[in-house]
Length: 601
Image 1 (cartoon, rainbow, N blue to C red):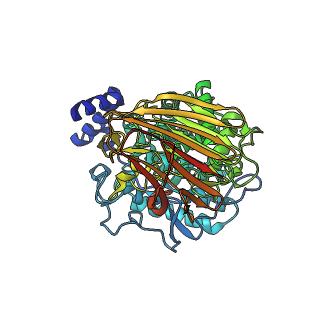
Image 2: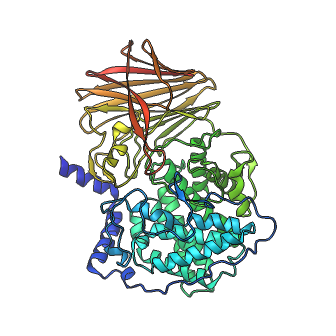
Image 3: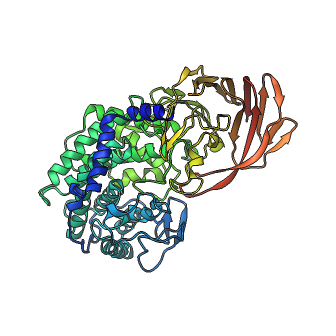
């Protein structure tokens, strides 16, 4: 069974993708990969000069003025000197050896390498460029000083910060954005040119590996080549080839990874945002440089992708369901909004690809203003709809949002979250997902398992067997799917599945102005089943069989009879590397049954 599962799963990944990854790894192991023969000089300052931006500058992002930030939540005081670029604030373990060639450093050692990468994503470069554009000479000096220190500490192609092509790509996009913000992208400093050239030389030879991942590695690296290559026009003989390669893969990745309904291959809200921001920056840059238009197919796919994220976003808070993998990545910090505020990304993308204004005035417009883009036209808020190719039912009523996640996997699923339900009311995430926490920490795999979601767990197992860290087998197939039906008063949707062992689960949800009703029908091969609901923090107390928290009440019936759920605590991670406790209720049954949960407002 295990062998059959592995074979069938790898077949679904695609032989071409497996071949790309295998060729990359074999090339590195043999020492014959072209990326291993690269050489470059250390870039020298200055990288930027005093702002030459025309007209008044929008408000600056001052969030990096007094603190260093990791993953949008952990911060440490700003020091007078540049940081240790290889330090991990979440671990006391040994630091990676920055003198080693990057390919000699383990992907997953004793700690999470993403913690080391975070400061080298150059979010501070973008933030300080906005301050320098507003006349802050100290921010400009610090920007040049830190970049010079980074370049000396991270010698070309040595150490952990050169290990990932996507990380290098994020740096390129931020470096070019900063030049744009300062009005210097047409006449950049020699130090910046050298730094961008070194990065593109690192990205281009491993593009095939990025494509084989079938995720945002390919979109990020394509965007870096397109933006960076056109930025370097007439400054490097390879620039045009890099730009053309980036454009070609931006087109191909949009057609391959973004479904017609806008769903993205990673089935993740935060990764969807990263992909969308990447394409938004590429399109904004294309307009800024008056480059040939992207295809109508790309524009339409990205318009649909913008619609997808808009539908998922709570307008009152800007937050969105924490569904899918979440590694803390965020592009284009041109405003000081919180990591979990998706409005800047939605506003930028809807303006570019739909000529629509998703939200009114606010700091989420700063990206548009910094990139010299006009707002779109006012339009209606999203309504209830199904994203049938990605496997999402989105139900909406005034100030209320419910999302039912169901299995529709054309790409590998990263979480066993079939039939998870997220519920939002007036900006409160009443029923919520656990998130991700970390890709390489003790117990981190639990977050992607079925027990970390609002769904049924059969016999304490995941819905799909885990084959390795990031790969599940026996991908589920949706059954009994009923697309969203909204009559103006009540919205309804349903879906189900049968797992590889024979356990069956079908879920129907209905949403109206007063609350949510969820009907779960379970049958087939199982001995015990556990229904879990992960709740918003608060003073949840039982009133008989009803759990209450202020105006909110939750009740659960099993085969028409009231039952008293077990109230306990569990953990969630709304930001990468952060864990907090939240309440959870659960009900266990040992037979086929129908369970009805009612949440009232």
